[in-house]
Each structure stands twice: as structure tokens, then as C-alpha cells.
Amino acid sequence: MGKGRILIVDDDAEMRALLRDHLRGEGYATALAPHGPAALAALRDADYDVVVADLRMQGMDGLELLERARGIRPEARVIIITAFGSIDSAIAAMRAGAFHYVPKPFTLPEISLAVEKALEDRRLREENRRLREEVEGRYRLGSLLGASPAMQAVFALIRQAAPGDSNVLITGESGTGKELVAKALHYNSPRAEHPFVPVNCAAIPANLLESELFGHVKGAFTGAVVARRGLFREAEGGTLFLDEIGDMAPELQAKLLRVIEGWAVRPVGGDEAIPVDLRLVAATNQDLRTRIQDGAFREDLYYRLAVIPIHLPPLRERREDIPLLAERFMRRAAGAAEKGMQGFTPEAMAALLRHPWPGNVRELENVVERVVTLTAGPQVSAEALLLDASAAPSPTALLARAAHRPTLKDLTGEYVGLVLREVGGDKSKAAEILGISKRTLYRWEKPLAAGGADPPEVSA
Image 1 (cartoon, helix red, strand yellow):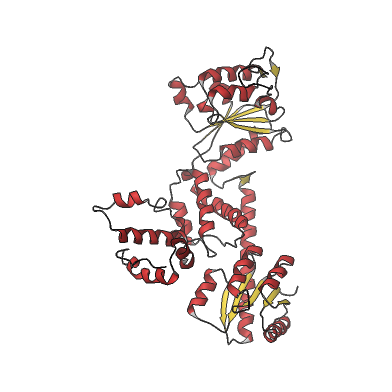
Image 2 (tube, rainbow, N blue to C red):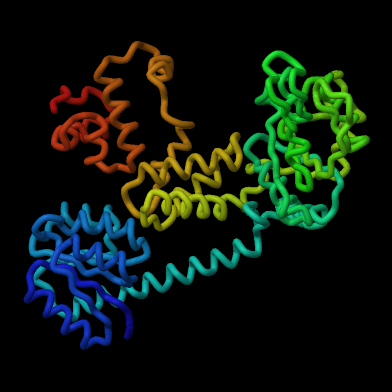
């Protein structure tokens, strides 16, 4: 492989040969492609460190190749070369994720320097990735991730509790990852080869939840045309996870308590209790002690469930975990979207750290997934996160915040600015969403910069 693998893409045979001979002389392994489709095929077949591509080619141009190449080999660095150099094309190439832009005429040492810098950038990023993975390895348990002292304490408790069979009660706000804790308990226990069966107690009507949990015999009630085993028996040998246990009806709480006391279930309509062997893990986002005081939850059931209590802190109380979580969610979302994202700008990460995260880890994951979908460039900007605005303002909110009724032109300016923020300033994408030409959008920039007042009339 020499110093690195370089793919040269140019529809000019002489230019391809010139670059190949020069880069081979510099110690690089090189491959040639006469057009974009051949380059994409080469990238699917082999890993290249750097792609050097002409901007103007027949059929697929360099920018389209760049966009598609980043979906196949996001780690490859792309250098665009062209005889049609301009500020606009340079900006377009860099926004699309090009590492460098070299206008013709260029000298061969310029190409060597660009390739050398691209390789160094790749090596540094791969080293950073390896370091992040090492950090994650130290600060994760299964799908849970956290470097904060609070999460490290949770991990320690999970490791201690997992080998046993004691009931566990997981508490914490919505979106903190309570089911992930339940899975970590299960998959780090001797029961890991047996079923993990989750059920959301709040999602099933009370009159059906008893049958869902304990099963029923044929003919037990209208519609019971066949017998049902129930989730307690489905979880035999494994773990039954009762989520949102605080919403369980009082009469069903009493029946659950009897099951826990004897580890046997009596199906609805049945006369015989059937022994069960499983571990019970419950979770709630409610304060069960307050529910007990209000008479809505049985105190004896609470103590049966909370043999080992595990509390998950909200994300706002463990902000050290936000960068780790955000980077993991970005890698996952970018991989699914086949995008070569390179992380967050410092301003974007600062915005993530400032945000209160009322929806906790689930909200963070949704924000990252959204911004990866809407961001065209290699990095996420603070503006693209839409955090300070607390999501997009509705037309009703726009009307309410003004002392007078705004004009249609005022609202148009507001909406155009919103769309531009959502797509990270990508005017081509914004124009497509707005249903106007890119030229029209450029004409609006000046009035929008002045506060959104009196934009020109819409023209396609």
C-alpha cells in the first residue's frame, strides 16, 4: 500500500496518467477511474485513503461523486481539482464535505501537499475515533453510556445486582433509559440465554392487563376463544420487565403481590396456580412514595418490588455524558443515512451542554437524528440544532409574540429564516423546500438579514 491508497478520477486520460506517475513516485499506491460510476464501483470494492477527483466530468460531476462517495467511504478524504475555479464552486465543494479544493493550473508539489494533509487528517481522526471507542469501553455497560460519577455508580450497582434474582425497581424521569438498565441486568445475569419480556403497564387497558400478564383459559370471557399463557409464563427462566408500574390499577396490584409472594400465576378463569421461575424488574417515572401516601399504590407491593432500587439521574444532572452520547448517536444516525459526518462544531457542542434536556437522553437522540438528516455539510452547527428556539415557532406563536398583527411578508421572512436554519444554511435545499428558485432566495437574503421585513414577492 505504500504511504497510502489514492483513487484518481478524471475523464482526461493524460491528467490521470500524470497524477498517477507523480503520486506513485511519491510512494503512494494509486488506482484510476475515468468517470464517476467507475470511481463508485472502485470505492465499493476497496478502501481508499484519498480520492482526487476532477470537478467537471461527463455525466456525474465531481460534486455528485463527492456526495455519493461519502456515503460509501465516509472516512476517505476527497480533494477536488478543476480548471473552472470560482469562489462559488469552492464553497459548494467544501460544504459538500471536500477536504481540499485545488484550482488549475496547479503544480504537482501542490497536489502532493494536499494529499499529505488529507492523509494526516484521516490518521488524526482515526486516532481520535479509537480513543473515543476506548473511552466508551471504559464508560459503558451494554447499551448504557456514561462517564459521570452518577452513571458510574449506576453501573456498579447493575454489576452487583445482575448475578442475583432479587426484584429490582428502576426509577427516573421519562427518557433516562430505564429499559436499557433492565436489559443490562438481564444480559449480564445467568438468565441471559432465556427471554427478556418487556410490557408497558400504562399502554394496556386495566381490564386486559391481567389476562396479558397472567394468561387466561379458553372461554374465560367474551373473545377468549383460545387459551393464553400470559407474559409471566412467556418469561419463564428469564426476566419480566414491568414498565410504568406506577400506572397499574390497585386491584391488579393486589394480584401481582400474590404472584410475587408465591411465584405462581393463576390464569383468568382458571382454578390452578402455575409455578413460574423468572426475575422481576419494574420501572416508573413517578414518585411511588407519593402515590402510596395518596392511596394509589400499595406500600407492601412497593417493598416487594424495590428490593434493589436503582435511580437513573436526569441528563441535566450528568452533563459530562452529553458529548459521549451525542457522538454515539451521530455515528449511528450518520451510518444509517450513509453520511460521512465529522461531529459537532465547538459552538454546537456548547449549545448541547447548555440545553436543559427535559426529555433526557431520548430527546438528545431525537435531536441528533434530526440534525444529521437535515445537515448537508460534514459538521453540525449550533444554528442547525434549533435548541435555543425550543423547536420551530408555530404560526400561532409568531402571531402571539407581536404586539400587532404581522403582515404576510413578515411571516414569509420568518418562515424563510426558519427553513434556512433547519438545513444549516444550504440554499439549494432551502429553495427546494420553499418551492422557489435559488435566485429568488438570494434576493431575499438582504431583507432577511435586516430583520425579515418586507421580502420580495415570491417567484418560482
